[in-house]
Figure (tube, rainbow, N blue to C red):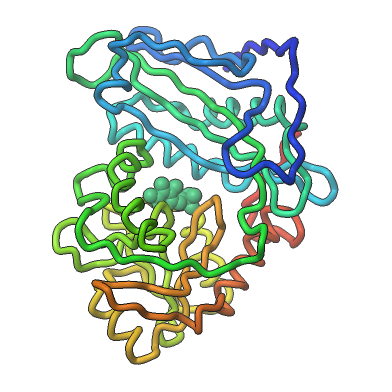
Length: 354
Ligand SMILES: *Cc1c(COP(=O)(O)O)cnc(C)c1O
């Protein structure tokens, strides 16, 4: 794949790492390429970061044909920059594309686009503890007609944002509300795809939980509202009576790369990990009997996020005294250690950027 690179003539000043936050600042360039059914992917380019112009009838604005990914470039202590399991994001994006009738990108081309772009923006990877360069690949349908059908035209873009440490004030467990009204996804729907529509539909429950002092919701399955699915936009894991239990990938759950990595690390440490249905009744029973030892969410942004309190139908349960558990902490240390190059990557998960 040929990528035409046009460098900006007005590079921006890089923000100080103390003010970064999440997704507020963007780098000097972006990657773009276009697709049409006749030509396939064409015009791969890295151009100065700028607004995107859309036809007012563009498919994405009316029918929500949009998918995205999220991954990070990490600056190691020795100054090198590396990605974490990028091929997993690329494969998942193609799975999402298939569900939304958006075009596939050959894995090698997507990886070339990503690594070439990160190499261009490498200097934007901050070095302060816990900071990283967040990468947001996304694709949208862009037919210039109001007809409803699988799109014939699409655009793929990658933007990058230097982001601050998720845990500036240390890892504090969060309070989670179990959502018993809205659902995020159903089997056969788009739950396993990383698409913008899933987020649009989940904001209402998130808002309600926030108003009551909770930081996220725990989703139940869309049919029986009985089985645990995810927490906010993270996968969820529990330590029950010494074993690790996490909802199986049933079709309505996003197959997280952090989830997958946690499972592999935990199995390597000798834990039994059960990927299965976990009902709210079983969870309630484990909470009441004291067998629920730890609970945490996992995703690229936070790595792991310990859950200190769960609220279900008005009843509140504290987990591990509201403190981060041993397994949660060790997962955090192992994964961040590999990502920032502080410990040996025995899994072969990291990819250095030249
Ligand atoms: C992105 C995402 C996750 C986490 O996936 P990672 O690959 O670990 O970042 C979990 N749930 C939802 C709904 C997501 O969108």
